[in-house]
Length: 507
Image 1 (cartoon, rainbow, N blue to C red):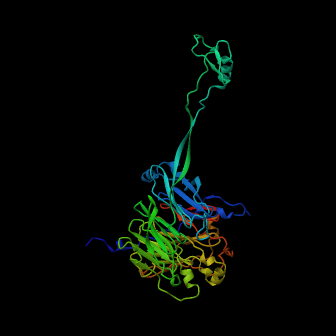
Image 2 (image 1 turned 90 degrees about the horizontal axis):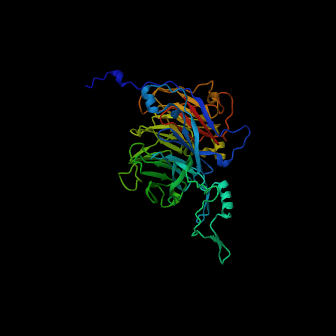
Image 3 (image 1 turned 180 degrees about the vertical axis):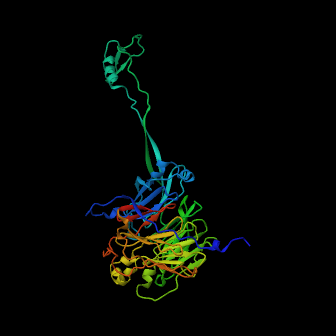
């Protein structure tokens, strides 16, 4: 007997719902201001410490932000150990930006390659420098961002006033005798025995000295990983070993070493011998946060495959398959089942996936089905035909988990995003708007309560909405979509992109 009573086997306590507040916004638009296509944010990523945030846009730029409130209060770990109250919410400031990718043209395939940044991933810091990977459709780049001290040297020439005096001295009678040369020039006979000092003395020389020292951030491209993908890159992910990373396109996943840019290893290839037999494509891929030999990738058929790099060099055979049992089918079933994004939880045990209509939470120890399913915008189901006509049904929404694994979040239309509690018994399902008043759309009709998990095999469905308009009677705008968002790794803080604006919230 281990001495544990029945109370020790209880499920974890359900945390109370969070109250979200606006923190700050970068690039806020004025009323009626048109957004330039190149300024629309296309990628967001916190680093592991949460002290740095990177965004990429459709113009190929990467913008870095750094946290400032931690510096104001000293080392965060020290404050936590002292139980020092941090009065201010998380604050970030603009750090620097650089042009990561430029538009290109593939002459062999007559194909234009956009400069748009598809993904950004932070790498391990070293010697105070920041390292990150960024990719567009075809090319991955490895960047180093470092503070450089630029020294300004004082002027080394003669003092102007003394230089002017020197001109009159040279022409005085006390100067060395001048000798005319055959080529028309002149020189002075310094072998003369006249050692008298010129009037006013010799001109003073200025020795070089550091006048000022400025610190500037310099972004340098360390490596370019190119010519390895025939199709558009949809994912990059760092390995926990700090040495390798993967890149995935529709049909292949390649494994790279950070130090080697001219070769990669193809570890997954789902391309059929005859392309007419193609039934599914790879949509997202990510390394396990702790096991360097494990990665997962999702498909357009709504399945997630876990592969083990130790099994074989070519990992076409998965070690685990996660998919939901098929239900009623319609013309749109396969389209809305396609998974647009997957994320591992920090514990490495759970995988969060986002398809068009739902968020699903999977336990890698249980492949019979998701442990929880969250309805993101069920009210759209009657409008799937219109969404198909406008191509909105192919929008790729991202998802994220909180660092403690208690909550999940994803985006929707009308610049809305949703936060769900994923602990068994939680009824938390908040709808927030990317604006300075995030709680404006909190409805009068709360989301449906959750069914408690009597066993891991039962599925929780929460947040389902039945109408095509929100609780305040506002119609949804399908042209404004919140595709990209990221959760701070250690705190309840979310950064999300609404067109060209970066909004940040805390709870």
